Structure formats: C-alpha cells, structure tokens
Amino acid sequence: RGYTKPIERSTMIVSTILYFSLKLLLYALVAFLSYVIVNYTYEKHTSTPLKIAHEFQPKIVVLGVNLMPCLGAFLRCLPESMRRNMVVKQSAPGKIHLDDWYDIFDEDPYKIEEVVPGKVWNVTYSFVDENAFNSKAREGAKMIGMDFDSEEAHKCIL
Image (cartoon, rainbow, N blue to C red):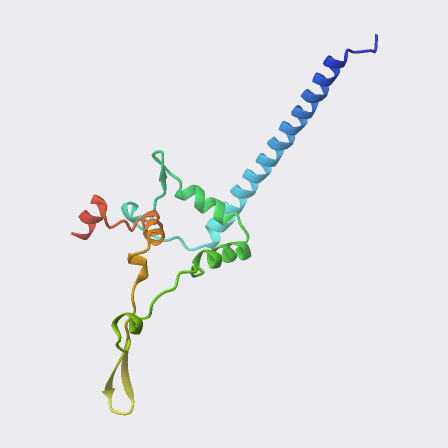
C-alpha cells in the first residue's frame, strides 16, 4: 500500500521541487517589488523633482513603450555607492587615443588676452569635440533625446 512506482515517485519529486522553486521565485519577486516601491516612495520625498516639459524629457522607446521610468525606478532602488560606481565606470574614457588641438592644427590651443594689465587675463582653450564623430556617443545622445537628425529636433531648433 505505501509503495509507489519509480516513475510516479520521480514525477512527484520533480513537481515538488518545481512547486517550491516557483514559490521561492514568487516570494523573491514580491520582496523585490516591495523594496522598489518603498525605496521609490522614500526617494520621491527626499529628492528635488525637475520640472521638464514632456516633449523634452529623455526617452528610451522599445516597441512603442518608454522604458525611461522603469530605468529610473531601477536606478533609484540601488544604493548610492553602487549608482556612483556605475556612473564613474560608464564615464571613464575609452582606450581610443584622442589627438590634441596642437597635434591636429599645429597651433597652441591656449589664447591669452590681457584684460586688465598685470591683473586680469582672458584664457581660451580650444579642443576637438570627439563626440561628434563617435558613433557610441551619438547613440547615447539619442537615448537622452539629443537626436539632431530627427524631425522633432528640427522643429524644436527652428
């Protein structure tokens, strides 16, 4: 009476493991969503909101859905140290060698004008903007709404 067939027994074990795995996954999902909601509520009251018109807000559109609010909520739920670490890693310069103004044009990048003799100088430093020619930088600019090739940008500029 207490004996079960080996196939029924292995099916029972697999279904039990699957049940507890799904249950654990559901608990983890509920805990994560609770953490995001509580942290979002806390951060919402401690941060200063930016008043930006809707058409100028950054957008990341995938399949017609703006993912920027989801990304913002995800980043808000991270600890401050982790956020800073991510920003520093992403803004670190690549391994591309950038030529200096002097290397390209063979002239001094500094222009110094004496405004008040012996007291005040106006110093201008010229440099080459590599982001205009970097495809990765252009894609990043498009993500935050700085796509100067789009019709929307032409309407806003003109």
